[in-house]
Image 1: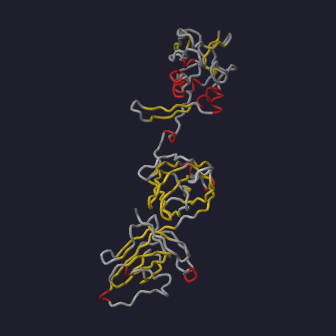
Image 2: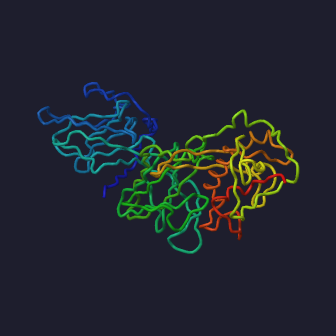
Image 3: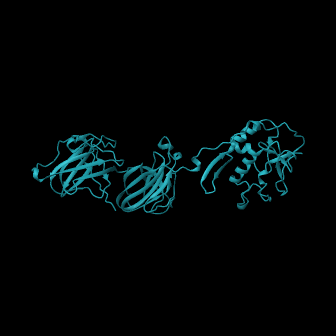
Length: 427
C-alpha cells in the first residue's frame, strides 16, 4: 500500500496571507529562471561550501497536472528542518544543500492539511528531483442517514463531499466512513481508494443509502457510467453517489477518475420519424355505408389482401376495404391516439448480427393520419400503417404469447393475423 503523509500546517498564515490556489500556471521555467518565492524572509538555506552542495528540485502539482503554488515546501535532514521555500507560479522550488538525503514536507500558509500521492518524498543525490501531486483533506459537512457498522437502525453521519480528482478522507473512529461524490460532467468513472487495508463499496444516493453494495467492487475499483441526465446546472440538480470506506489508519485517498465518454446507446440515437405520403393524406371518398365491425382476429381463417388501390381488403382483392382505428376504441387496448397522448408508439430495431440499427417513433405518423380520419376515427389500412402496427407491436409485445404479455388475455390468436386487432370493415 502507498503511504499517506499528513502534516501539520505552518504558523505562517499571518506572514504570508495566502490561501492555496489550485489553478493552472505558466510552464516551469528553467532552474536558473525560478520565480522568487512569495517570501524568502526566514528561509533557512544553510551556508555551505560549493564543493559539498547538491542542487535539489521539488515540483508541486495539482491532481490535473497543473502547477500548484503558494505552497510551503520544507526539507528535513534527520527530522530537523534544513530549509524551506514558498513555491511561486512556476510550481517548483530549488535548494542548494549539502550532499545527503532529505525528507520533503508540504504545507499551506492557511493552516490546511495537505497530502501528496507518492511512494516517498525523499531527495537524494541519486534522485535530486521529485514531483509531488498534492491534494487537500475532504471535509465532512453533509449530514447522511446510513447503515452503521454497529448495527441497528440507520445512524447519522457527517459525510465527506468530493468531486472529480483526489482527496484525503479521514476515517470515522469505530464506524463506517461515507463519501458523497458529485460529478461536474458526464462520463465513465473509476473510483478507487489507497490506504491501509481499505475497503471501498458503492451504496446508492444520499436519499436512499443501501446496506448492500449496488455495484460490485472489482480489484478495489468501482466503475460505472454517469449520464448527461445525472449532471445538472447546479449541485441541487445533479445526482450524488454514496461510497462507503472502511480501513485501518487515520484515513485514505479517495480518487474519482473520469476515464472517458459514456458509450453511445440506442437511447442516445435520434428518432427515425416516418411521414405519410401526400396521396395518403386525403379523406377517403369510397363507400362507408353500414356499421363499422371489428375484424375477428380469433378466427384463424381471417385473411386480408392488398387491392389495386393500395388499401387492404377483407378476404379478396375486391372485398370490403379494411380500416384501422386511430381514435376509436378497439376490443383489446386503448386507441392509438390515446397511447400517443400518454407515451410513445415506437420500436428499436437491430440487425441480424445483434448490432443496433435504428429506433422509430410513430406518434408523428399517427398525428398525420388523424387529420384525414373520418367521424369514426378510422382511415383505410395501407402498407405504411400495416408496417407501423407490425413493427411497433412486435417490439412492444402486443402479441408476446410466449411470456403471457399479450393484449388478448385468454383468447387464442394466430400471431400471423394478430396485427389486425385494431382493424374493422363497414358492413
